[in-house]
Amino acid sequence: MTLLSNKVALVLVDVQYDFLETGTLPVPKSSEIIPVITKLMKLIKDNGGLIVATQDWHPDNHVSFASNHKDKLPFQSTIIYHQGIPVNQVLWPVHCVQNTHGAHIVDAIPSELIDYTVQKGLNHNVDSYSGFADNQYFEITKLAKILYQNHIETVIIVGLAADYCVKMTCLDAIKFGFKTILIKEATRSVNPDEFDSTMELLNSKGVIIAHAKDLAIA
Ligand code: VGL
Ligand code: ZN
Image (cartoon, rainbow, N blue to C red):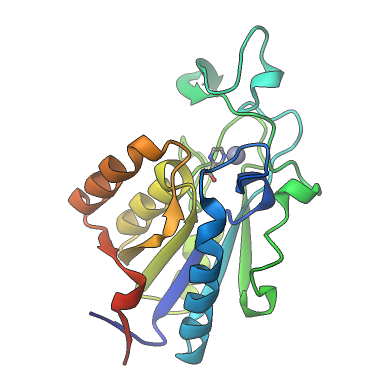
């Protein structure tokens, strides 16, 4: 189906220890995607493509951590205020704290094939699900610039978690004008019940939901 060319970038979203089954914010069956991603990375590199990894990289006082709110538990929601604007925020267990093992991109991913790493979630006042921008679009990351400067036209997105950071990265990739492909076998949801509805929503917004075996070589 899809023809790979040197105008393609593979974007690895948050493939970090805290999102594995053994992490602090476990995504069910997440480790199953690692071999699929590794194979895709080799395929992309063999065809001259670019590989960019995003990395959730929070300070320990981050607003998304339930432990930083009085009387709140992980997976509850609350209203936070960012620059005076009320924002609905899901509260999470402490995860991906800067310079901890949990924030490390998993070692089974061949790091020598990653061209750029884009960190996100550094501002403690606002969460950042998308690899392109924070949740309020107050600041963008360097991801769009990296892709534009490398003349990328198509992005293939994989990683964790399908219903949060992968979803928001796909939606922003569409907004930034990229042909956007999500590989179904290379992503998993925090809430497995939301997987199918997330795929339907992304498809309705123009994201191509593809299978790893659909990727052919130009
Ligand atoms: C993520 C919740 C909080 C993700 C990151 O990578 O999907 N989810 N931080
Ligand atoms: Zn996070």
